[in-house]
Amino acid sequence: MANVIVIGAQWGDEGKGKITDLLSRSADVVVRYQGGVNAGHTVVVADQTFKLHLIPSGILYPNTHCMIGSGTVIDPKVLIEELDTLQNLGVKTDNLFISEAAHVTMPYHRLIDQASEERRGDHKIGTTGRGIGPTYADKSERTGIRMLDILDPDGLQKQLRWTVNYKNDILDKLYGLPSLDPDQVIQEYQGYADRLRPYVVDCSLKLYAAYQERRNILFEGAQGTLLDLDHGTYPYVTSSNPVAGGACVGTGVGPTMIDRVIGVAKAYTTRVGEGPFPTELKDEMGAALCERGAEFGTTTGRRRRCGWFDAVIGRYAVRINGLDCLAVTKLDILDSLAEIKVCVAYDIDGQLSKDFPTNARQFARCTPVYETLPGWQQSTIHCRTLEDLPSQALSYLKFLAEAVEVPIAIISLGAERDQTIIVEDPIHGPKRALLHANASNGCPPNSQMSKGLGSGDG
Image (cartoon, rainbow, N blue to C red; front, side, top):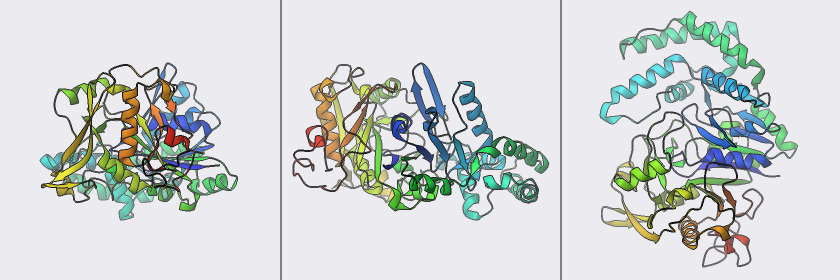
């Protein structure tokens, strides 16, 4: 039995949907613990592409229970659309459960989000405009609406009538926007409540029962480490905690229930929205990576900024999340390159640093220090074992593993489920007990990982 957290080790969009889908085959429960419809996971199964925003990708396995934890914020309209789409495609959805304590995104949240971002002008953050930040703000201000609230018609009427009028003052006086009709909002959300009522439960209680029954639980994060509200590139971050620690808070389980943490990183780096990005390529190479990698957001369709792999933020992700191993995605996008660069350190005002600076102003001044590796210039999309990989591709992966100081357990070479190399079982493989057991790569000499892509793990 293993309870595993899957997190993004960069700025999100790392391909967590595919990796979560892959690991869901051995999971009894998959639970989403933060974020909202500002996140998107794309999963390709045979000739079908599933774009999921709130529902965990484990929903594609009929016997897997899927939960949306209390740390998420839920837009009921989008959730119902997602349910309808899955049901029309023949996907079973009666194994979905929604936390009664999850907060709900309301129409005024979206309006305030969009108006606030527009008013920022040159200081905009680059939000999706889906109302996520204002929903979390109301949660912190203790004026939020939760799933259990919309299930209580009388209570919802009293609460929403006051809240909508309060938000109308903000919409009118601060942003010059038309007021919302409280009765219309109440009616709309009571309709959502009727549809979603069968799915709403105490997810924390249900998760603990699964733990006691020794079920395999997979905790699915959205966004990525560098977008974490507390530990990311603030203020250009999301409004929740995508890091591994957020899984406990966002689902109502204790940290002793977690057995392993798996990070997902692209073989290069991307970022959506505003904010510093040291390895960003603003030239033809960046445009080529964007085109080859189809780097456009699942949720917004926005073009992703592209750059070389950044091992400094990789090591930071290892430290902040306690990563046991990495899943590296989109290696195939680099197939045609004659040489590939990896950022191994930053030059900050003439000083060399291998550590990520949490000072935002310092981070904005970072210049990447690169090491250049030879490319392999041949296709990897049909590789299914390490032996199938070109030697230069294998060397590149070993370099990444050593640079970030954890082993690579999974290599993804395309969107399809079978376009994957499993180096070692990422769930039941060896733990990080012997971090520096071997001076050359941190693994015991006889471990499978030291023979393959091990580094910093035992």
